Structure formats: C-alpha cells, structure tokens
Image (cartoon, rainbow, N blue to C red; front, side):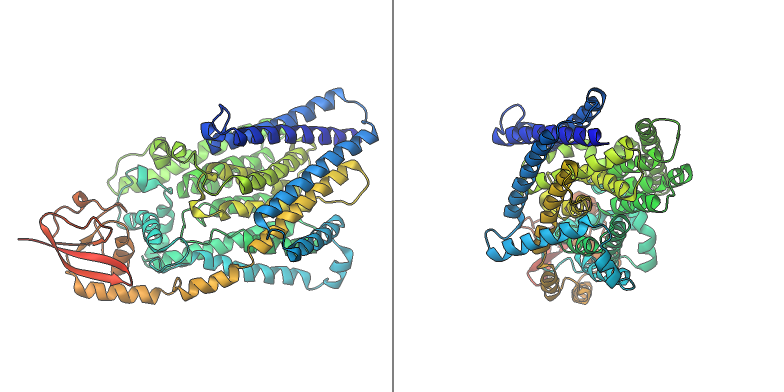
Length: 607
C-alpha cells in the first residue's frame, strides 16, 4: 500500500504541474494556437481536465507496473513539501479572490477556522463533540438544514417578476417571460416548434399537471420553483450527513453550502434552480444507494426514469445526468466485467434509454397538440444551432474563481475514481465525491461561459467538493496523509471564504422583500386595473405580456417572447411592452398603462 501511495503522490504532482503549465500558457498568451481566445473557454477547460486526469491516472497505472518498491522517504517528503507549498499558494490566491483583502480580522479568523476544522475533521467522528451532542446533534443538523432551506426557497420563489431586484427590472421581465412562455404555450396546447421554444428544455410538459391543478400564473410557478430549490438543498445536505463523519464538518459544510452555494440570487430561473434540480436528485440517489448498500440492476434500470425526465426538463443538465447515472450501472450490472467496461456499457444504456424515453414523451404531447414528429435534433432544440459556439468566448466574470472551482472538482474526481475504480471500494464518501465531480465538471464546463445567471450554479458544487476534500484530512507524519491534509487546508480555505462571501445573504433577502419581490398582490392589482381598461378581444405579444395574460387567464396569441406582429394577425386590439419600437401602421395608441415605470401601450385598429 505504501508503494501505491507514493505512486499517487508522484502522479498527482505531475498531473497538477502539467495542468498548471497549460493553464498558464493558455491565459498568458490568449491569441496563441492554445490560447483562451483561440480555443474558447469550453475547449480550454476540457483540455485542462483531460490533461490533469489523463496524466495522473496514466502515470499512476504506469508506476504501479514499473515501481515495485517504496521510494526513499526523503524523496516522499520532498514531493509532499512541493505539493504542500502549491496548496498554500493556491489557498492564498483563493483568499485574495473571495476573501476580504488584507483585513487583519479576516486573516486571523481564517487561520483559526482552518486550523480548528482541519483538526476536527482529522479525528473523524470527533469523540468529544459527539459525546456532548449525543442526543441532539442530528436534530441540530436538521434544524440548520431547515433554516437554510427557507433561504434557498426565497432565492427562487420570487413571484413578482416586475419588481426591481437582482439583475434589474427589464432583465427580469424579459428573461422571466422567456422562461414562462414555454409553460404558457404548453398550457394552451401549442406544439413544440424547435429552437427558442426549447431553449431551456421541454420542462413545461412536466410542469403542466401542476399548472392545471394549482393555477396558471407566476405566483404558482414562483412558489413551485422555490419549493424545488429548497428540496435540492435538503437532498444535498442529507448527502453531506451520510458521507461525513465529523459533526463539526457537517455543521460548517451545510452552512457553507447554505449561504454561498446559492449566490445566484436572481430571477434567472433558467440557471437557478432549473439546471440544478435533477443533478441534485441524482447526486442524492447515488449517495443514498451507497449508504444503504442498495446498488443493483433493479435500481439502475428502474432509475433510468431519472435521466429520462432530466433530459425532458433541460437538455444540458439532462445530458450530464445521463453520464452520472451510468455510475450507478458501473456499480450494479455485469459484475464479472471490469468496472470501467461496466461504466461504458451502462453509459450506452443510459443514453439510449433516456433519449428514447424523452422522444416518446415529447412526441406524444406534440402529436396530441397537432404538431409534427420530433427527432433527436429537435429534442435538443437551441443547442443544435451553434449555441455552444455562441457562448464559447468572453467570460465576463473572469477565470480566476472558475479555476479554483475546477481544481476542487478535479481533486474530488481523483479521489472518487481511485477509490471506486482502482481500489474497488464502494464507500459512501467516494460515491458522493465522484457524483459531485461528474456533475460539477459537466455543468461547469458548459456554463463556464454563461455567467449571466450568477456563479451559484457552480459555487454549489464548489462547496460540496470542499467538504469532501476536507473530510479526507488526517493528521500524521506519513507523507501521503500529510499531502491529503495540505489539500484539506485548501478546502478549509474555500469553505471559510464561501462563508464570509455569503454572509450578506440574509440581509439580501430583506432587501428583496422590501422591493416587493414576494408581493404578488401588487402585480395582481395592476392586472385587474389593466383588465378594466382593455377590450375583451385584446391580444398580446412580446416579453412582459406573458405574465399579464397568465394572470388575466387569457391566451395572449403571440407565442414568442420577442414581439412579432405577424403572429398576432390583424387584431382589433393588442398590448405591447414599450421598448422604443412602438409605432405600427394601421394602429393607434389608445392608452398607456404603467406598472411603476414599466409601460405598456394599448393599441386599437384604425378603421
């Protein structure tokens, strides 16, 4: 075992140095053939992942064959010192990105926190603390989870999409309308047409029964998304509890996830929670299956429903879930085959079953509504039009933080793969680690160029990975364990910086409340006044009108969140959001209706 640990140290260091060198070159010389501007962020980060993981595992396997004895202890300590120095360096860089500069208070707090939590994590269950909290520690963890779940609920249950908060008023109207359009169209039985109607997936089919049951308006949708967001947080906290021994680490891990993993505090539903719902579910299912030792063919085949629904819900996160679900098959089907072969077989089954199932569901809906047959290209909709290339450059939020997020996920991937595929140890922590790494790297690679929805869609995985890495700490003079503890210090820094960075979250909830983000009655009063001032035959089109016509209980006729006059035909009356393009031949403005400074024109046909 000592020889394997030394192989691990050498392989990890070599892979890390190669990835760091590539990262330096691609960002230092952005216009070179391997520069970030030439490759784009998506390709650059994919190469980074392949380089790091490929060199690490390739060298680890090679050394296992040629290095039959332990390396000198002095050399092991030298390697550990190099890796420890690298961890110290990137910890300082992370603090400079997420911390509070050179403020002595935060420097001292950070040092005390890191030393304390690494010490507690190193002693596993923490006998002293566990004995004191013998009867109440589980209750405390669930109370903490419940309290923070309320915060996560409030991040998404923003039912008044016209109020000024987060990204700004017109941004909310436009993007919430883009999200709501698909739901409204499905509610009225409009067939899917491809491209923008499936920009976020075919989630409206799944939401349709709830809309029929509880009502079709932004109040219902906002509350539903809030509840789904809270449920995601609870599932992920349960994974932390199942996979982590240290009580203190559970407390701070849940806290870090709760206040920093939700930094995408906005109306941008498309990113948060839309693209985290099924990933959170599959992480929980895989972790719970390992915890209860329930991996088996039955779970894998029945559970194919999860990636199928995930693909219907959202194309990109659904694709990531399909890959992650193959991990379940690798643990359960064809036990006589090597685990890696089982993974590829289960991946083929997962993709084939999910795509087929999604096509069946979407085509049943489309044919009932009088639409055309939908093929694989239409299923992925907007993604088939070069959308990935469209966002492949220009990372507005910068690469500094994303590099740390990827680094932590890489460490998780190394640990999970080594335990599950090399040591063949199906532990709860290893399963949790590889599930987080697989989903986090998949989501992160795609959204590395889409900062519009905030960083929360990635910071969630950052916090989860930090908890996993920190839980591997073990205070010892052994070089291998020293290296793990150095990584744990880096993870502790991430947890600390996440905590101080997200400490304004609760006041932010108050500011959203004061901005009437949760007050639907105000919007309802506006719609009631508008209803009294327009003719019964009035139709609408374009963003902003979606929310209004949902509240009025009318079909707005216009199907796109962009205003298209040809879609309306030649109506007698229509309303449109004022955006500077407000003159139409043959029509005159009869009234202008305001929601604070948001204006709608009411048009009447000239006879």
